[in-house]
Amino acid sequence: MKKYKVGVIGATGMVGQRFVSLLKNHPWFQLSVVAASSRSAGRTYEESVAGRWQMPNPIPDEACKLVVYDAQTDIDQIAQCVDFVFSAVDMKKEEIKALELKYAQAECPVISNNSAHRWTPDVPMVIPEVNPEHTEIIDFQRKRLGTKRGFIAVKSNCSIQSYIPALHPLKDTFGLTHALVCTYQAISGAGKNFDTWPEMIDNVMPLISGEEEKTEQEPLKIWGTITGTQIVPAVSLSITSQCIRVPVTDGHLAAVFMAFNEKPATHDIKKIWQEFKGRPQILKLPSAPNQFLNYFEDSDRPQTKLDRMLEDGMAISLGRLRPDNQYDYRFIGLSHNTLRGAAGGAVLLAELLCADGFI
Image (cartoon, rainbow, N blue to C red; front, side, top):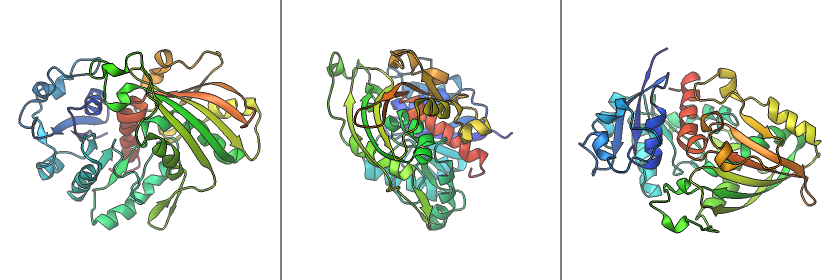
């Protein structure tokens, strides 16, 4: 099969670096362009990230000598060099929104890690195993934009990856009505580590600005339906949340409480989780975990440090399923926030879009 030429916009930041790392030896994608702010433009990628490379592995050889483009002024040139781009820019929300739109209108598909377009009605916000059918809205989006190839697709907030995949196969079968979620989120979710954020050592912060609104609202769009030329959010259930920053490098953990119209048996829930396969598993996409939902019977699992890298950080770890005296059940979920929740989830989304002919 053909190799797709890929660009990373915002390539020098933490999430951009993760994209560059994940594209090393990818069977479908060839990193061809890196772009960042004007401060980095004109230098090699190796020079641009010198002293601030945060990934555990060295800079991939194929990225080192690439000359960094200016993400804002070189759009037309970049669009001519690639089949699509990943967007990981760190800018104000309205600036990101405008920039991604310019790439799409330059006939360059955009797979975005950012939140700017998550609530644009005809932009699909996709967890590939959960709502792959939402990619069908791209045809309507292209008509609105007046493009043949260009479009924008986004991944969802990193924290909801730890529990929405577990709720999804139960939702329609048993009629999920309410969920209460408390998330305990790693510092890399803020693009930081302990060297750059020493205040987090031996500390817990009870507020992550804007995160609770995303946690409560984004699942409703993911579970929504395409109606006419837009995605209409679901209204048959509600989620309430608290989101807390904890002194962990990587991995978002969630304590989840769930209520149903028809209370299932514990063994039925575990069986559904074990047997659930999404479209990425059926298509055997390169980045898809073989076993998407993994339930641990051990009472002290999942643990962030032990389980965040399950299936290269792309699987969801679950445990401690038990009855609750106010809701029907409670459980613990865990996902790797910069892999499944960020760059890895976007790469998987790009694979799905290529497999289904949108790129």
